[in-house]
Image 1 (cartoon, rainbow, N blue to C red):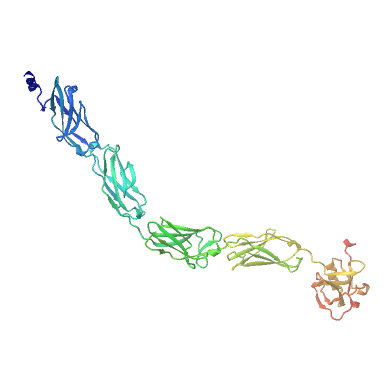
Image 2 (image 1 turned 135 degrees about the vertical axis):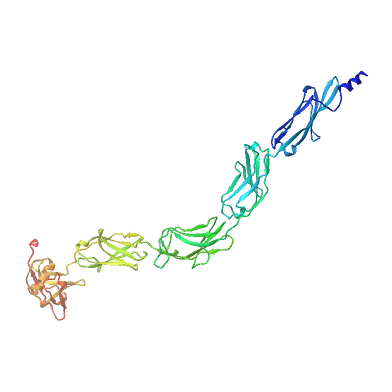
Length: 507
């Protein structure tokens, strides 16, 4: 009977008492760690400890322990209490519970909103994505990280900025975009709704073509290009976005001469070394999916710089002699006109000749011994100036074409002349001292003395009579310069003779 009395006095079940208490914050934010602690006057006497939320059992411990909410969620808001079984006496246990305490878990930040500026961008422009949310003033220093996504693909992860910029958006970049904001520990992470970004492609228009380098305009109106130099055909559009296919064409040929596809409003086709065959009309087209647009045609005129002039010297005979008239010819057959030619003797200018339609130019010279030496010519047409290779010319005295034979010395004897490689005599018709003076001068002898009869100087066999009458004035340098009458009825019994003084150096 005593035992039952003790049980009734000391062991009432399920009562609330001041012996057991609950300790926990009344407010918390998402992601916080919340500790719920139940303690008694002697925690060592606790045999079983249970925690409850909104009347539902959530945890049981065999001794005094705290219940930890490691990452608070809004759903963790509610009423909490705990119940403990403790040893009272010997084998007698009692059960006590705490009063209820309310926990309110507040939102750390709302789900972000994604905005795109502009929402309908033009292809090639810059687009900024903003992931906007806000923190309460109490948690204003909380660091958030942001990630951006498009159609299931990650554009940027763990970005410290709430903004992400696409510097040059493409038509293919149209799609659904969203973002996520999260704490540095990733304990709280929230996504925005999807926002559709539509990228507008602008059709190409106002296609034009130009050449580089620009050297002005030719006589026929085309843009100038120099043979051998680099030439770029530049095709551009005033408007147009996306991947643009540029093609270049000749007006006189089918098909294209080149094409390129690139995300730019300008492209160029390079001709590394222009040739004469590149002259003609060109145009280009541009297409970004809306149909090709064509540029106006540009005519290209190819100019050939003066590069390789060739010098030649025209001599009347096999060899150049004093008194001959020679002709210097200079030609750069490919140089574009007009061409200015200059002629040089030992780098001294002899003269210049302009060829307005191109081709060659000539300069005539009456030769003296001083004209021996090296000759060259120069061609220039405004684009370049070039010098020819050197041509050597050796001028000599002409061979003598008169002689005195069978005399006592070289300045006396029968007069013989050379004609077409053969020698013959001169008839004495009209022969006088004026004729003798010319012969003496031509032979380098002294003054004329008299006109002896040729009978004094018997002729060699079979010589023809070549001159009937020599009509010299006396001042000529050679007998060949005198007027003459060819033979018609003269024999060797009438051959002319000459006697000259012998110069001192020959004595």
